[in-house]
Amino acid sequence: MCATNAILRSLGLEVYASGHRRWPEEVKAQAVAETLRPGAMVNDVPARFGIQPSQLTGWRRLAKDGALLLPADGEVHEAVVNIAQQTGRPSANLSGA
Image (cartoon, rainbow, N blue to C red; front, top):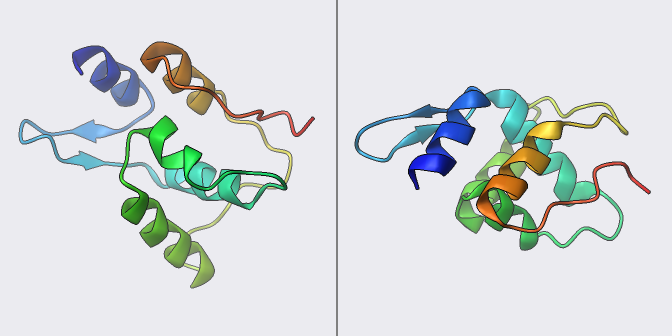
């Protein structure tokens, strides 16, 4: 998990000694945006980010309530690809193609 924590820290994630993680708003928004893409498998997204599905549900609720600003359609974030490559989890097709 140390390598994963290092990758996540490079994205701006705060990882505490207790294991608690504080996610940047941009990463939360990217995770939610991925679930809204046509053909997206919502259950695959939490695995790529290393979070529980209930965490993603909470972020989706924040976006629905307007408390989380989602990225513009088509905006690509390499962060998810980097996490997937380093953790061995499948990455999303972020290009929209």
